[in-house]
Structures are given as C-alpha cells and as structure tokens.
Image (cartoon, rainbow, N blue to C red):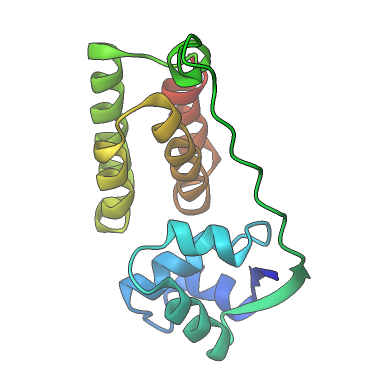
Length: 166
C-alpha cells in the first residue's frame, strides 16, 4: 500500500514561520510533502532515513495521511532487440555532450543560489545526473521545491531556463 501525505496547518505554519525550528532534514522532508506524492516517491526523494523522517513529521503533527492506495504492479521487463538503439539515445529530446554538461552545472548553481543550504541535496543530485532522462525528474522536483520556497516567479524562471527549451 502506498500512502499519500499532506502538510497539516502546523506543517504549513512551520514552512512559513520556522516557529518550531525543525532540524534541516525534517524541514527538507516537510517541504517535499505536497499531498500528491506517495510515501514511495518521497522515500526516493528524501536523503537519509526518509521513513524515520516521515514518521517523525507524522508523530509531531506536521503531516497527515490523506490517502492509502494499492501499489501498482511493476511493468514486465522486456529486452529490446540488439539492432534497435537504446530509447534514451533517440527519444529523450534533451541536450547532450557539452550542452548537457553546461545545463547540469547551471541548474545546480541556480538551485544553490536560490535555496542556499536547503538546496544542497538537489544541487548534488543535479551534478551527479549522467543523462537527460536521469536529470529531467530532478529538474521537475527542483522546480516544485523552488515554487514552495521561493514562489512562482522563481519557479517559472527555472522552468523556462532548464525545462521548456527541451
């Protein structure tokens, strides 16, 4: 079963005011809770012991369960014929080579400048991404975090610069 969490009023107040002075890891996890992502998605996004962080936020009343859904079965693995090039090399639509390297570095710098220490994990993930297929979900996550923390103008600037051209 997959669980979906959302911020409670206390959680929203913490994001706005920092009145409870949550530890950085807890605050970062709280920021990623949006009422749409399942716990499985959050566990992949949150560094460290994400399960304990989510449980702590739940126990302290910063988040609440809003839905429990059945897990989707994993798609059956299939191997493409040897004569067909990998999908990533033909269908990704993203930049490659020096253009990709530049985009990756600029996106990491943008996140670091806008979010400060809170964006360090995202910046590292951006720097480590080896392909457009790998970086695109991280760019989308960065846009959501920027939206939550810096507002729609900054998130839109990020999207226009790093996502829309591709």
